[in-house]
Image (cartoon, rainbow, N blue to C red; front, side):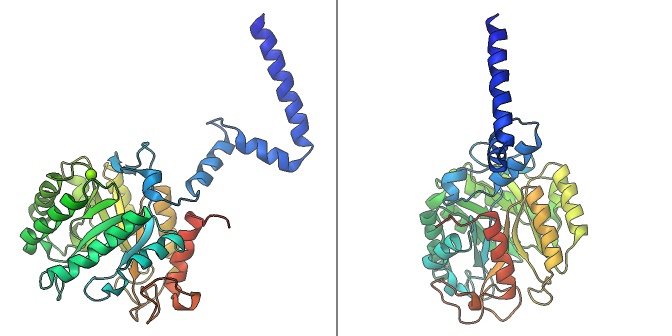
Length: 358
Ligand code: MG
């Protein structure tokens, strides 16, 4: 009897509410978005909206990241999509590795992750270890200060020839910063045409052993053959570590659906992927800016909860550079110092992580 009475009262309440709601369109919208029925369409559109809620401090929001199946998830086990910018080769355009630029990338570009690209060869870290190391440390410290994730990238095309140097570097970073959830290690940016099974996998395993001695849990992202476009190879022979994912790099004018198809196959085998570097241009870093292809890639990454970072924060005279020559090393860039690609990418970032209302 009591249950029946309760049902009648609830029915009357709902009935009254539905009459009231239909009297005003605004109220109807409010009521609908407050419903929490997991099967309803309203809930699904809620989920999509929530995904693009303003995130002010990414690391506070998401915490310690880890790999779960073929996704990267946050401290609550929810899939997370980080979006941000990669810096340029540290030895060539290291002037932007400043705390002010990191802060601007967070506040104005709405990044949740940045990537420090430690140049190894070409007059980089091997010849000037202290000089290049300082730039990376400056960006790591700034990212921690701003609550951003920071990918520490061994930016090299022949890292298997510098294994000892890479081990020493990553060991030091893991020892200094392994307790911070901010840090993501990228052990080898873009290998050339060398064997995954014979060369690349053993290389990564050696670096991972070194990192894990100091940092048992942070994400490690592994490059693969042909400028990190053969994610099918690690999918067939993955590394035995819980928190390893794999790098996929693309340039929108050069790489199209065929590369996404390959990545889909790799995902279906259970590996997780992070796009630690992509461009809107051709693979050279210059040439045609392909807006349509860029949009197709962004949609695919959003659907699959794949994090992505644009190449690059640089004022080089090439179309993938986000800044015009002479843009300030303190951030605060006016619109006319941002390039065509920079505008496209900035708008994408701001649409997915809207600035807080004034
Ligand atoms: Mg850790």
